[in-house]
Image 1: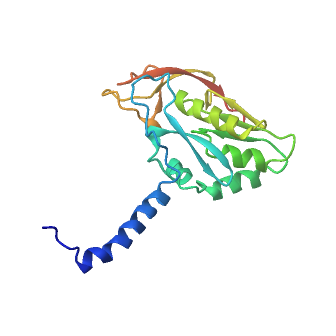
Image 2: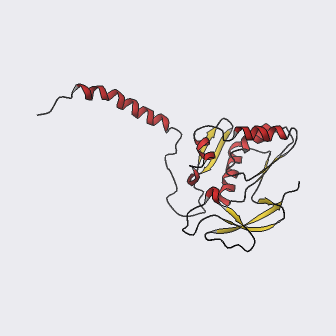
Image 3: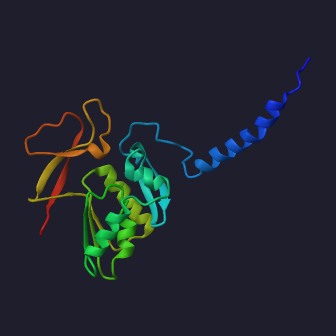
Length: 196
């Protein structure tokens, strides 16, 4: 014999529907396929996110970094820094070293005066590729993006991308001093001299 639903279960139904709707709304900007299931570094494991300045190609494994979290939430990361950079270069060019996935590029490129340029540099190969896609998504013709780092002298250094266990370092990727041995995956990167 089936049991009749009690008054409490009848009250819970609308809340269950509201919860399902809220979850659907909360994750509306989340990608359906979370990550590339393979381990091939040639595949750009990223997704597209948006805020009021434009579209961004964000490395998926760095989704928990502050800049990525802000962009995934539809917000602007370090808006005061962007405004300061634009205010410091009225009518001139902007140099942006350590571009990451291009989280500043749409705002900077659209905020500079006609004829000015944003000179963007990113040594991490994956972040550089994402920044290039960000430029393409937003048609940022005023951005000159270079796959290199900036330093006191020109040359080539190693950048460590993964630790000894093979885990991606993301924002903890770092340039190794000449002669310093890395404990994980490293690649060579050009260093351009910053003229001041």
